[in-house]
Structure formats: C-alpha cells, structure tokens
Length: 427
Ligand code: HAM
Image (tube, rainbow, N blue to C red; front, side):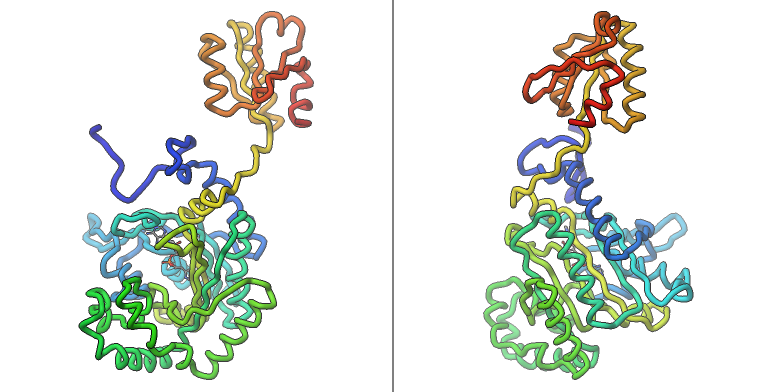
C-alpha cells in the first residue's frame, strides 16, 4: 500500500473494523459530542472556535517553555512568510488570545466558553496518547469564587456520568499562589537533593527546569523517594487554604466523590490554586479522562486585563474507550431506517418521489439506485443496519400499498403509501 495514515493519528469511520478499533466509529463520536454540547448549554457555556494554528509564542508564553508540551511535543512550522506557527496543542491559550484580542471583557464581566476541537501533540506512540486528539473543553473568565471551581468540575462530572461512565475518581489538589509555590519548590528541591542521582533521568532534568513535575513521575524509584516528600498543601497561604477548604466542602455537598492528591500538579504552567483530574481505572497508565484548574494570572500575563479564570479539557478518545470498556451502549437511532428497493423504471420514479416525501417528514429513508437484484439490496440493507425494507414493483404501484418488512424479526405489514410516515413514526 503506497499511502498509509501518518503515525499517531486515526480515522473516524462509520464501520467497526475490529474490536480494538470500535472507539473510532463515528456513531460514538457524534453521540459524545452531542451530549457535550447539551451539558455545556445546560451549564450556560457558549461555543467558541479558534483557528487550528496560532503564533508559536502564544503557547510558549502560556503553557510554559519548560513543559513537555512546549519543549518536546509541538508541531511548529514556518509559513511562507517565515512566521513561526504551531498547531494548537491545547485549547486554553487560544481562547485567551481571542478574548484579549477582541476585548471581550468590555462586553460583560463573566464569560463562559466551550469548544470541541482537535489538538496536536508530538507524543511517543503508546495507548491513550495520540498525535491528534480531540478535547471537549470549557473556560470561564471573571470569577475567582470556589463556587465557580465546583460548578466547572461538576459540569465535567455530569457529562461523564450522563454518558453512563462508572467508577470515576476526581483527584483534587491545590498548588496555591505563585509565592507559596516558590517556597514549596525550594523545600521540595532541598528534600530531593540527597537523592538526586537516584532519580530517573527525566526527574533529574526536571530538578532544575520544573521540579514540581517530578511529583507526577510514574517511575517506581522516583515514587519511592517521593513518599516522604513535603506536601504542597502544607505551603498554602491563608487565602489559598480557605479557597481549597471551601472547594472540598462544596464538592461534598454536591455529592461528587473526590480524593485529595497532593502530587497532582498538571503538565501546564499556567495553573494556581485548584487543580483536578478525573480518572477511570480502565485506561491503564494514561488514566486521565480530563483535567483542568484555576489559572488566574494567565490573561494578564498574555497582555490582557487581570481576570481570574477556570477550565478543563477532556480527551474524547479516552472517554469513548472507557465507554466501550464499561459496555456502555449507544441509544438507538431515533427513527427507523427504511430502505426502498424499486424493481424497474416506473418503480424507481415512484420510490424516488416517496423518498423525498418521507424525508420531508424527517424520516431516515434510503433507496437502492442500482436497479440490481433484491439480494444485493438486502446486503446493503444489512450494511446500513436498516430496520425496515420495502420492495416496490408494479403490483405495489397499482395497489398504492407496500409491504414493510422488519429486518430483525422478518415480520411484514401492508401499509398504504400515504400511511408509511405515520406507521414508521409510531415504531
Ligand atoms: P491536558 O491535561 O493537557 O489539559 O489535556 C486534557 C485532556 O486531554 C487529558 O486529560 C486527556 O484526556 C486528553 N489528552 C491530552 N493529551 C492527549 C493525547 N496526546 N492523546 C489523547 N488524549 C490526550 C489541557 O489541555 C488544558 N488546556 C485543560 C484546561 C482547560 N485547563 C484549563 N482549561
């Protein structure tokens, strides 16, 4: 085969080609995206769409030059005008760029955006990590109340629960203010210094570039050393401490099960105070279904007004994989799907007329245009999972009545042409 798909990306297609690829079926994607929109609307979020690429500097300044995303994973290229551009690796920075550029703060004090978009990261190939992945994300700008944190976390929890996912854990932490984080970094480095040469290679590098990320290491030796490490929660200043306590008690009142995880630091530099991730056991090492947190300084840092913000991103690949692992079934097609099979030229014309009439009534109807044998048409009916078929020939045209055959049971019913719509709508 001359042309093959590039590494780390995948096609989303109507068919299931193998059980491992079941999550690439478009019916799952449509359903999940539709529910994401419904939940976002329910919580008062409105859609925003930003371009696929931005100036590289935007991601360097927001996500942070010492993060894996910026230092290793960005798809960066020069355009024909020699400008450095980058395929969006995450959604937050682009939404903030748009917010600042359009001066949206002048229109209202609070802004709630959501997006469903592909993101691009040059990842090492492994399960659950793709070079193009899709996120449902939300960003709310203008409120620094802990209630806001819990509303957003509750939106993600509602979305995942409405999909039918079980056994979800919300991991919660606070990484405090910039000042408290600075103090904590010093304490963490002082603790790790004697073990420096025993740490994994990645953690040794992070010791000088981004020590907080060592807490996130999956390396067994690192994890052992980290058991006795100081906790960031002991370094919170009074206002971060109160914020965190309120978030915890509101989560309890909202009945969202959560665990406090002082090692949760997230892989992007813009966060402060609350950070969170929702995990599912079925996903193995890459178990984060989605995560986010508060990022109060980012808009100002990018040259905009000093406004607080909070958001999350959830990876739809992992969401669908978890649905499949937990045997979540998709709801049935809302209307029965009928395949009309005309026999001969006159029947073809009559069926084509019927086809458009039924579609005007919003019924999902298809027609076999090939004019070949009924056997071929039946094969096609199976392929498209038609619930009903109807063969139309001279007799049907004369009588103005056709025989509706239910594929699953083989049951047949005579229905007048002008009654088909009513019959199908009644199921
Ligand atoms: P993130 O944790 O980097 O956060 O990504 C959010 C989610 O996207 C992850 O939890 C995971 O489900 C999914 N994800 C990330 N990378 C990949 C990948 N290579 N393959 C498959 N899935 C992936 C952000 O991007 C932040 N912008 C979230 C946010 C919004 N924070 C505040 N607002």
